[in-house]
Image 1 (tube, rainbow, N blue to C red):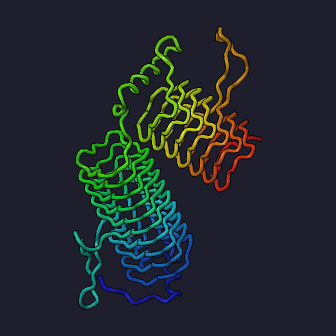
Image 2: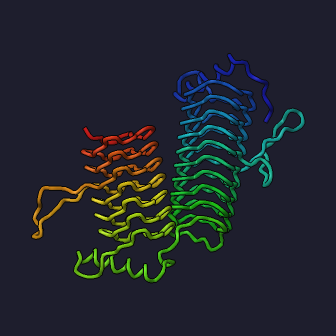
Image 3: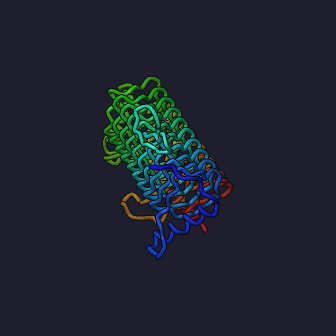
Length: 432
């Protein structure tokens, strides 16, 4: 391939126009080819360059938000410090690309190829593509990939040190050998991802979905896996020194295990058998209680920091004053529960039921009265409550600063004095 001369701004705009015609199959159109061009600092948001060629193109410091690069050949392109929020890179070739410190928030990178690759100059103006084990690694150091979609992406050996991928979709992504040291992946979906040999030391993996992921040979030293979904993950050949991982209930003292078993029997038999548990002020930090029935239990002032209570039942349970910081209550049922003054900062309650319990007479007939969940004075700063049911809940003086309440149902809830500064309320049902 012969290197091309730099294009003038007029020529660049002409190429963009002809490419859009080519996409529309209009007369006179031509596929855009900006191979080896210097477009550093351009301001072209919203352009449609689907299937165009940008091999070796310098797009550093550019502003290209909401642009379409799907199916593009971006081999060894330079996007350093580029603004690429909400761009579409579906199935693009980004091998050897430089995305260092780029802003890719909410971008779509489904099935992209970010493996290593190097573009080398040669004699007589020719260029050669060289795939190297040591050179030309895709560089996404410090990149902002907040809530980006990288499902199925090929990120083998990519350099992603310190990248922000909070809430990103990395389902089934190939990340073997990738450098993810100190990366932020809180709430990300890595189900079925290939992380063999990846370096995740000191990474923030809180509340991630890691189900079925391959982690053989991965470095997870000092990483935080608080509240992570880790079903069907074999950590036996991974390095976990200093990592924060949810602990099995079997690690509790046998007396506490017995109390929990008796309480589940009590809850299942509606009080006819077993004994109601009083576990107030116990330390259950980082314990995995997935699916446990704590309905009616007294867990007041318990320390449950980072505990996992996914799909657990806590109907009419007392959690008043408990420390539930960064605990995982996804899909849990807490109807009628007392959470007054509880600390739930950074907790995950996606899809949880925290509504009201209908009161019945001894003969089982309805009274028409309801006992709402009590969240008065609760601290839910930065918590994730997507799709949560809080109908009729009491949230007087609750702190919901920065909480994600998208799709939540707060119909007839009492929000008197509640703080919702910075809260995400997209599609939420609020009290009239």
